[in-house]
Length: 308
Ligand SMILES: O=C(O)CCC(=O)C(=O)O
Image (cartoon, rainbow, N blue to C red; front, top):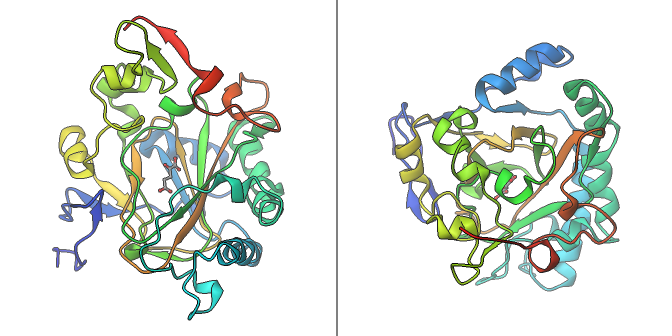
């Protein structure tokens, strides 16, 4: 147990330092709701807004049921347990399922939650003008044992405006052992990141370096991760890693594309279900990789050649 009474928490298989100077819990900004200036100030200060209960829980639960049914239809769930619990088949290997969020069965219910009036009204007010969202929706169905390495979103979606925000929405209650999102407080303002890692793009091919991406050529591991070691990233960058004691259906966590984040590992036997979706002013440039009926996404024609 740590000094704050938690069992070991891991990210990427590495135990995190849970001492007060390295780890803590997200600040609840729901009391600021409606005060756009205060919400912008809070985002500017910490790099995120945590809004528990902001979305309609019943709508989120309906979408969850449809997602669970999709997973059950594919035989990914433990057949001895109710589908709604999303308990994984032993040995299941699943992590990323944008096809479910962008598909015809659960998609409409998910999109109603994340692109409906409540969310878009929030971004209209927060961004001070009509907001839009990317057409592409990222959806995670994170199997036991898996998690997300630390990264900043800008390296995956930095070709349009940088006044771009991610909303992370759990489609299930996510206590610590189910492995929710974790972010590094204040990391959106670290000069070395802003002038280095955050200027790069995963969809690049260094023609003088066997076509590896500029991130990989600069020594960043994986596909755009800042590091494969959340603990070490925190030690290097400073600040506290923050998460929620339990994310609940209806909660939303909004953060800047410069905020370092990843997830805790899923240490339970259920599949962690969540989406991450992107919002910006409609009048500002969009990253075309994520727009259209069939967004081009990464690779293929999205790759830009360069000399590194
Ligand atoms: O849900 C996760 O594990 C990661 C989400 C993420 O990277 C994001 O919201 O940008």
